[in-house]
Image (cartoon, rainbow, N blue to C red; front, side):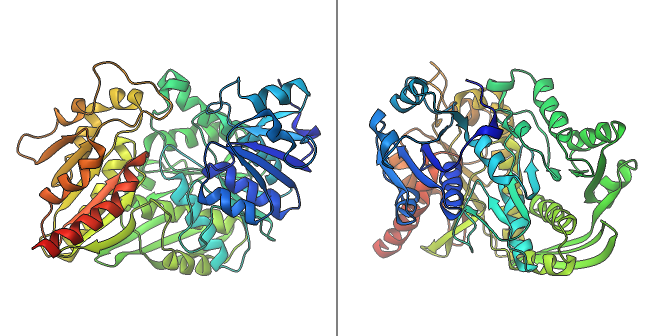
Length: 489
């Protein structure tokens, strides 16, 4: 049923799937603001336990009685319509009692009301850019509220109810839910067709970003990456509609799009074994600065994300130099080039969430830059798990090309997530397209993957576990097996 969000009462909120990354973060904010929070999930988890310690009442398993965990029926029920079946007993009972049902994105929109809304959108880089923006603002003495799709390493959380005027959040385009927001600052990092199971066509996917730009509040800023042609084109169309648009990128990208005022330009970026030193010119909101800072997280894509964070922070009213200092201290987000440890003969293991060919390419290029800067002959070995049958079939050639940037690859079978298996389709459609002279293993046995990796690595190599599914669990197992292998020698 359609719900008028202006009438929603957040005094008693029940959340189905409360342990999810997005849901648990919003539950934290609700609890901090004094709401009674109840919820359910299919299993216990660390996020669920944390919410319980904060005062939430959470049931394991779904049952109609869960709606009265707080002693009476809730005033609103929050769910992910894509992930929760419509015959879920809690949803059924909520409908029977005419309790408003809203999406997680609707709840986020309600929580952001009254704040300066900084929303980060794009096919890739949302979580990293949102996290950088939050870290930079905090270093500049601000206390923004935020909701992030990943956990900030330093803060140890994915959401916070701050005392400052800004609310920083990701704007997820996967189901067009970003169109429910009213940003004061809207950042678009890049646009590349994805989630075609929902959008059905490339044009429909591109259009959602035009519509998102049109959601800007009067006087708001649209910030686009000029190194991405589709993001730049979105900015140019927005300019024609009378919106305020600024861009960021390299000197060449800025020159290629003269109609869009350049708010941030990279002058130099120097890669070392410790990170990337960046010098940039920032000119936005009446300020101009020449800035220098060093990113701990490698990769040109992270340099671009840092420029977006600087622009957003300055527009929010923060001091540019303090923002830059915050970027130098930023030590990343869980599962974004996350260092997991070193074992064996100096083999380092990192983990990353990359699950689209462009993301895989960017992360492996960053890994290559890192080992090349070290100059010790180390190789990059990737253990990749494709995510979704539809995405794998759509981009099999692109995945093969991206993974070929590594020196060796182990490719697990497809993590179907919400999709049913497709007969005759496996990750072989990727590995069969990879170079014959490259060590490539299709490993359908998940439990055998660590041993397969051990057979490929050499002393000093960099191993990257990569994907949006269960592959993250292998990083610890690989480290353990590396240690056991050394002891056996």
